Amino acid sequence: MFPKASLSITVTLALISAATPVVPDSGVRVPFRTRDSLTNSDGVFNYDEAIRQIVRTHNKHRQNMINLENNMGREAFPEGAEIKPIMRYNASAHYEKRQKEPLTDESNDLQWAGPVSIGTPAQSFLIDFDTGSSDLWVPNTACTSTVCKSKHRYNPATSSTKANKTGTFSISYADGSSVSGPVYTEKVTVAGITATNQYFSPATTVSSFFSGEPVDGFLGMGWPGLSSLRQSPFFNTAFTQGTAATNMFAMKLAKSSSELYLGGTNPALYNGAIEYHTLSTSNKFWQLGNAKVLVGNNVTSSGFPTIIDSGTTIMYGPAAAVKAFYAAIPGSALYDNANGLYTYPCKSPPTVSFNWGGKNWVVSAANFNLGVSSSKTPTRCIGALSSKDLGLGSDIWLLGDSFMKNQYNVFNFAQNAVGFATLS
Image (tube, rainbow, N blue to C red; front, side):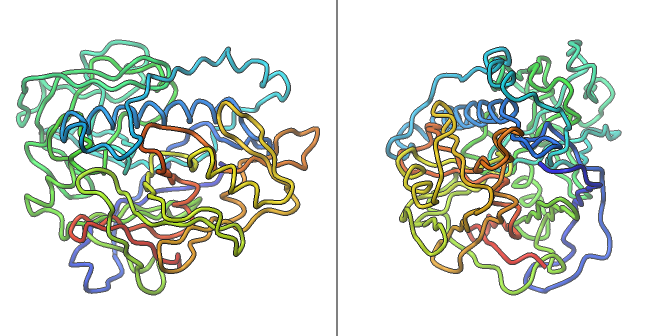
C-alpha cells in the first residue's frame, strides 16, 4: 500500500511441535505478489481500487454465507446475518471521482501469496492464502479465455494422482462474473506439507476480475463450514494425514520478511507469549468475541465479535459503531457515505487499538492511513476502517490486513483460538 519495496513471503514448515521454541533454519522464499494499491505513489488515496476491494470483500462473504447455509443450515447464521445480493464493480461508475483526482496505478500493495504444487508430476502455481475462505481453485487448461491464458493452468491429463468427482464449483467475484469448474481430488503440496486426495476445482471459467493479477488462484485457510466444495480444506486434510506437525499456522504480514508458517509458529518473528483468545463460533470463521475498539484511551464500542481475515484489505464495522468511532477523532468527517469511508486530519492521526481482554493491539498510524483524499488539499487522510454491512451479522466487525500487519497472528485449530504476539 506504500512505495515499492522488495518483499518476499516465506512459507516455512514447522519441524517440531510449537510447544518447543525453535528458530527455523530453512524455508521456501518466493517473490511477493502485487495488486493495485489503495495509496498511490504520491500518497493520494486510490478511490477506484478501494471500491474494487470493497466489492470483492462483499461478494466473498456473500458466498461464505451461502456456503454456511449449505453446510450447517440457516440456523448457523448469527443474528442479523443474511445473504446479500451480488455487488457489482463498474469502473466507469467511479469516473467522476477519478476526474476529481487523477490516479496513478503503481501496483505496490502487498498480497500474501506463495507456491503450491498440484498433481503428479507436480504442476506449480502462485496462490493467494486467505484465512477468510476455505477452498482451493486454479485455472484448468480447458479454460481458454484471455484471463486463463495469462495464468499457470492445471492439466488433469498429465497427472497420475487426479480423480474427477461429481458436482461443480462456483463462486462470484467483484465484476459479477464467476470462477467455476468441475471438482477433483489431487495431491497438493505447500512447502513440503502434502495433502493427498485433496478436493479442489480446476476452474474452466475464471472471472475477469483476475485479469492482470499475477496469482493463479486461491487457497482458503478457513474452517470446513465455509467450504463451497463441502470438503476438508487443504491444511485440515494435511494435519489429519499427519504431514503437518501441529494443527495450527501463523502469519506475519508486513512490507518485508512476510511469512506463512505451517504446523506451528516461528519464535524468531515475535517476542513474548502469544495471547490466545477462544473463538466465539464453531466451524465457521476465525471469529473472536467480546472485542472492544479504542481511540486513544476512549472505548468507542465493546462486546462485539471480530473476524480475522487475511483476504481482506481494510477493516469494516457496523455503521453506527463506525460513526461513534470517528466521532472520537477530532476533525474527522464522512467522505463517501455509500461505501462508509471517513477522513481525519493527517496532522493528528488517532491511536487506534483493539482489545479482547488482554493487551491493546495497536493499529499503527501508517497502517490506518490509506492516503490523502486529494493532492490539492493534502491535509485530510482516509481511515482504514469503513462502515459496510457485509451480511455477516448485525454487530460483527471484519479485520483485514490493516489490522493483521501490526502483530504476529496465530490460527490454532487445536485450541479453537486465534492468538496475537508482538513482532520482533
